[in-house]
Image (cartoon, rainbow, N blue to C red; front, side, top):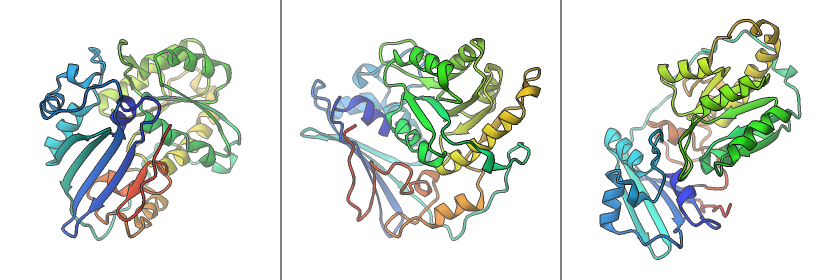
Length: 327
């Protein structure tokens, strides 16, 4: 929903805002609002039904054969699977999307042991001022990636993915200066053939890119991991991983990659997968530290991960003024 609002709202002033509220009965409401695109006709009940049914002419978006079709049909499928009620309407120039679901309170959080196959490394050896290139077609995901420099010793980061023309620019930037490349798997640009991150990884490898290659994708099934491994990626981060956790694991992966470069010239290293289950005591503490005005229910991971530093410019909570974005 956030990606949809950023991509299809007002082209210069989308004013995207996320609010989360709850009742004493743990009924959660997620509301995303954005300023409507001035060139699009106002939403109607009939149009909304067509959108939820996956009729993409109503969505005014690309429907390339290989597209992952992240949009309102994706939201509707997820809603049916989780028992969530969806509402979409337009009031004057404001589009309002709401998702309501029943959550369940928990009294404790299981602490998962570290599952990474990496050998222990001295994280203090992670260098400052590394150069990172990222590509993702989601504006919301890009906003999260923009927080990496302050977590990674002042790393210099370049983010691509706003347009299809960013693809060759991303490849060139990686080859010219990047120490780390981070790629989304599905890159869906309106009117263009679907492009995958795995394809771009193969391009980088053919050109001789020697830095750390990471996939950051919502697609982490066994067949996806095999695809990333065969393309030449070194590690995979699920998109449900907190940025604080991602930055920590990225340091470990980079140091291990540097230590093993000579060995991996001749053998393909094992693929490393990081997901939200790879919790350390520090990341569990992040859950406990959610301010009182945030929902206390953490039956769904995205509630627990709505911490202050994840997306500070667009996340609000019950009783907290919602900041807006004009980017």
